[in-house]
Image (tube, rainbow, N blue to C red; front, top):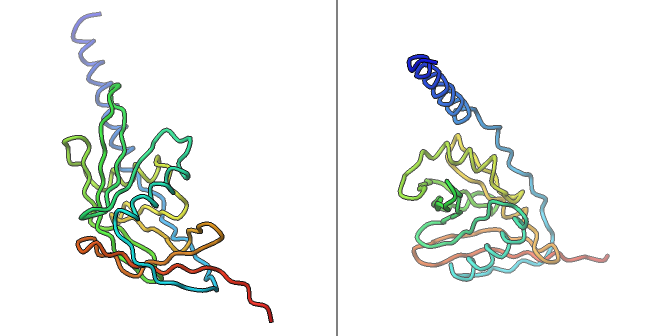
Length: 191
């Protein structure tokens, strides 16, 4: 086989790989469904917390929810909400870090907006990475990624702890290290 023919075959293979990669990256994501949450009747308490305490609770919950999955990640609160995972590239782990600004939305749930994404030293396009995470990350059912609007919706009120305890966010001010939420403990009323 002469070198010209080999060159054109290699060029065709490269073009096919580029077209397939572009098609995969530009494929529209499925519509995001926000889960409906049932109201819980019970005794409510206002709880004030700090970032360090919430970091421990969040990561303990994630360890239980993602147990046995190859893609592990951790979350921490600092000046923003950070999500970090290591992705193996050519046998070496490369850190993927996504950060968000948290916002309490109606009903006590949280919306994570204004994402920034870095993969090693590279800044990556937000929409593509959110689409990848939506398809491949082992997310709890209460987390919905919306790549088209570059946000993540966390349905806190759908998460049940212990004996069906329910949590609803009231205020998240990371700069002041002030996190306020309502803890509702279901009660049975006998008439």
